[in-house]
Image (cartoon, rainbow, N blue to C red; front, top):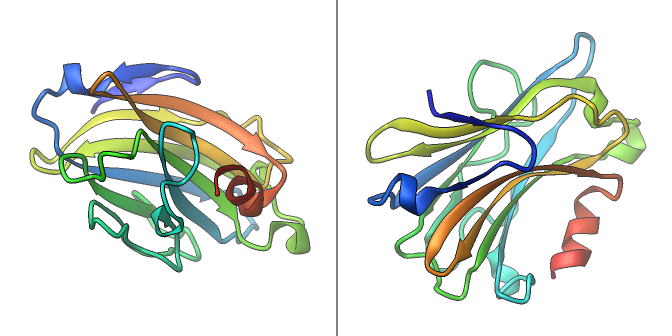
Length: 186
């Protein structure tokens, strides 16, 4: 079991794991009884200006891989049923386009407004980082359940600072759905 972070917690991955190259970003959640939501993980690969370095660097269910091949979404889990990670993103930090300074991980609820769905219908949501080559969890962040009205959420992000990769446990919700993030970062 890796380091457990709290909201706003930060860890220098480069210093903690100097040989870290290939990671898996695991995202998971459980539904409160009687609910059925379709959550979607999305990745925004941002430059120093906090904007996508190109449209193709927005990774989601309709664009599963970055042009450089460094980031790959393994696919959309439409039900969230089952144990373990519900959606996974694989990343190779060594071959990531050098213009990328931030890897932003967002989870949104599909058709939230139409179906009156929100994060308050979930429990046990988390994000974790796994060292793929050593098959071990480096860190995890269990999001608090005080997001009853949010329809999208920044679970966490990787930031590159002076050549080092940091992970920040964000847990920042919004009510604009995925489109609000696209508008902000495109």
